Length: 294
Ligand SMILES: [Zn+2]
Image 1 (cartoon, helix red, strand yellow):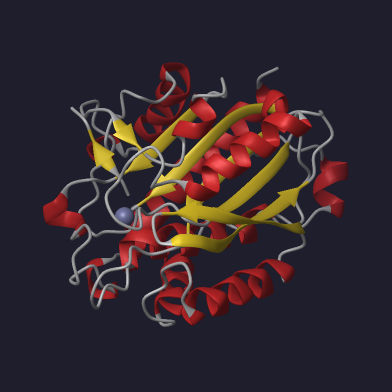
Image 2 (cartoon, protein in one colour):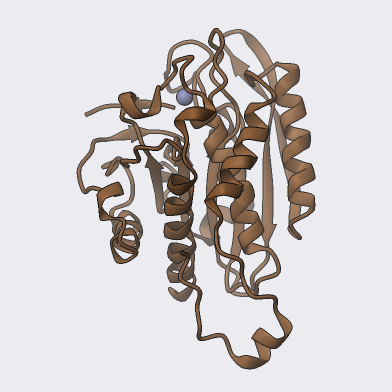
């Protein structure tokens, strides 16, 4: 990130014939998401151009390979203030049958700072998406579900339109060209969602209907205190898609006293399994509701 400018409800309605053939969906497990985050963070600082980010890419791919999805890479060379840098978004697809699609996204790179491991900022989104993949595994889908691990969210130097969100800018352009953006019902980005004292920003940049759907889902699950309806305008990986007309939302806790944003204190001890589980349950419910929309 970023800049500020101003128990999964399992559907019990599956027909018996489906439930007989399909393993019951597992609940989103916050402890597993936290543990996966810890494994990503254990690679150390993971800025673009580092050996650690290469190891993390291999880890993400190896984990996804166990989760029954199609895996693809979106590799490109980013023009940065420090010169060209190789980057790669990693995309998991759980195929549906409607022709429509939903994307859940988050970044895996970390800001290049002294002793900065980005447990929450870069780590939590990575662990969260890997656990979400385990929930989606082997389940019948209406829409294609894409899980996108964005590279290059962080600015190399100072956040600007040309020095930030490299991966999401690249994929938004690619998906615009190949027609995927037109198939997207929604893109929901998660960032800094694992800190113990969770308080999401009501991001006024995001699409209002989608924001209401997700915040209403949180209310219905008893999570009102974590999803207050107050905030400001956030710039994050959802912006390149918003700018191309995709209904998009950012879910982020941007309270610096909770998140230790861009601070060497952003370490694993600040994170809590319950926070991951709150966000996981909200997104599993939101995905189901989006799939029921035409
Ligand atoms: Zn950041």
